[in-house]
Length: 492
Image (cartoon, rainbow, N blue to C red):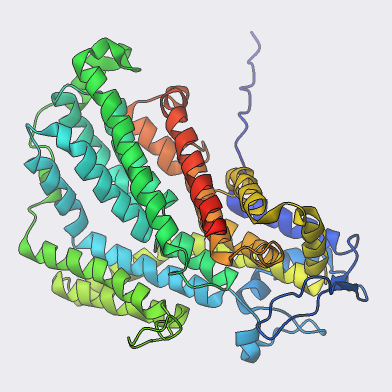
């Protein structure tokens, strides 16, 4: 007998691989695409109708691929290939964003180490025993708040076993419990209001404040969460009434055996103490302070002190609250430091993705083709009008989000092109940020490249095809909601 070689299964490349391929292709494009430039106004925005050719400056392929991420962290090279670090304010480098992400990681790591978030959610679940129907609106709202404030995603995986056990005991199925968690946090990310990893980074590279467009994003968050609650609750009640209606009915006995083996569900998260409540209050206060700090109150005509914060100040804010939460949580000095460093380490991949993605923009700028691409895009959208432009932008971000599932990487690589393009169409830059984050959030509810989606479905024992069959009507409704808010945002 001859041994047969196992067939190799195709795996989609990581965001790093895709971005490095793009980096090489962009360097190659500088040899092909004509160089050109716009005239710019005092605010640094390109003036429509002023595009003109300039001498070419093609980039070396290997050097650009290897050095691009490094220069992406610092900014734009001069004509001799040197990075002018001291003129940083004019370079739009990614080092401040990357450092912000690392400090946020430390802040989240310390907060999770105290056990406040886990204990709080477990406490809510315990209080709702016998009233499991209320778990849908309460828990999905809590997860949505986590998603919209700090991009809660991987953290939800800890709650699947607990919530599945409670839901099965109440007569629901594993799909109901999995959807409650995955859609709750996922819709929160889709409707990110102050999420620093999506809205914050995108706003920074788009040259707009995180507070701009907040009303529209709140509308998407509230209505989207309401749709999600109704959708999951309707399915769950149908299953409870007639278990045979479950899309995973054939697994009913096996799931009950696995998840309902006895024990005090949620006891591993510990008691929800007064100290935990204080920590959670400080956790959310950090985001409130961040939003207050970046809003230009003086420009709005309000007699409120304006702090004129941006990434350095926001980074310092989360560093302060991370240390404060660790002290209140009574973490020993070594534990506090190690936890903060470990949390920052967890975000190192995100920080590096930002650098690689920013390197693409640097290569385009150095090769003098950025304005040429803008010019071509200006010609393409010139007849669309504002509403047409923002809807096309939203639809464009759907496949881009599949190719680059990292919200930080996609924001970094796309905003330098899309934000100036919005000026040509008479659309505010913050609407482009909203289009990006809603499209990216929608795709990340179903994309098979997401560890959160596939991991959560695996724990809940739900097949990927079953998930698509269950969730596609809600995906369609969320897409329509996002496009309506974007269209209205252009018109008002």
